[in-house]
Length: 153
Image (cartoon, rainbow, N blue to C red; front, side):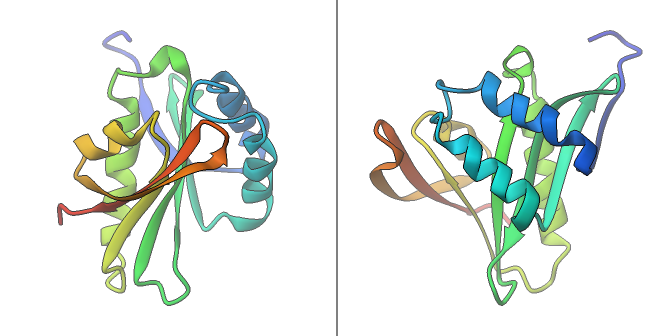
């Protein structure tokens, strides 16, 4: 990253779909099971409420969104993806903080949660999420579900 590099977060558009799917592929099988690609595709086509991409110099390097419970009291962080070349460089943290800030703008939201795996839960823990429970082999064999709740308000 140079002094002139520009980082922006913007709303996801349909034109971003292939790049977002590529981000998942770049993170499979380290962070995602191969069978999750169909789940992401379904999400992108049917379940998006708020979804964003993060760009560095007009190149999509990551994405992530959030959804709500039926009564909008719970905000759920969803589908965090970051190109491996840009991990551990604060881009994921920037995108997560952006979404938490957006969720806090909804007065109905009383709780923020994330469902993740043992491969990524430490990232969320570092940002104020606390582990609430684990379900072994939930996503796929070897990919456990880590339910987490945001405690910092």
